[in-house]
Image (tube, rainbow, N blue to C red):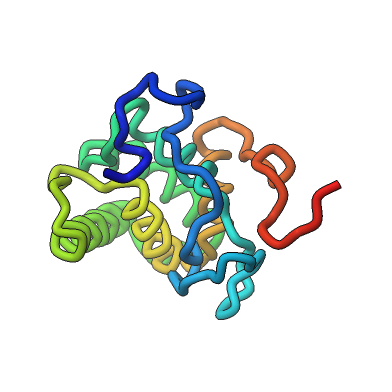
Length: 175
């Protein structure tokens, strides 16, 4: 079982922590793999994101549940629309088209999760698949994954965790 699937209450994590530690192994903007000591993506230059930050965005929509379900998209649609308007003043897509496209991306990622991982999770996205979903939504909106992640925190009315709060970057020197 992945670490985030372990029973609640075990270990020293807080209530909002899903238990995934460390840094994401894939770029949130282009999905290319990171090396262990990379602070930035070699393909697109996007800063590496802590798993904790992705998990916090995940929990904005799921609360304490372990899966991002299709019903969680309702709030995500509105946030994505506001982000789309901020990124592009000439919104080419109507809200209805945006909803249809995001639902299609969700279905695509869920299908990929079910087939690739041979996962028992078929009713919603896991945090790893949620990262893939965010990457695809960011591309659709014409922004980077890091910008989308920060904007989702802003839209939800919470301050985005900064790098200082989530630890030093991999490969970086600590004092």
